[in-house]
Length: 125
Image 1 (cartoon, rainbow, N blue to C red):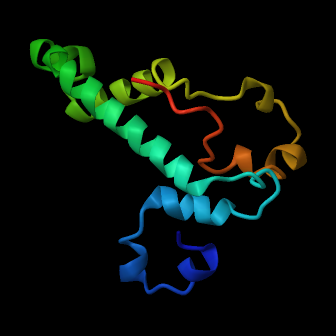
Image 2: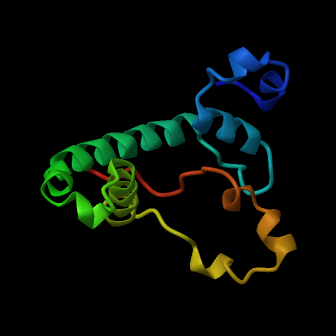
């Protein structure tokens, strides 16, 4: 796994080829709130979620073909709606509502509030 120290020294062309989630997790490493970070486990979970989103989007694509106007005639909008729906309903991804009114200092002092750190067990599909 690449470290943030390695990332900052990469040329732009090489940086552009890096996995965005891996970069996010590399930047979270060693920050308060990320003490138990399992970057490899997080990446596996994110990959499984992406597979699930793709599966469900493909499975429901007939809805777009049947009534594109329901999605403002936008395939991208349809895909974004299904991504959000699958992540929320199937993968239990969402906002931590208790953090919405947290003081800024408290919110920004915990890496788990700022980075793609997966704390939930891997859903079984």
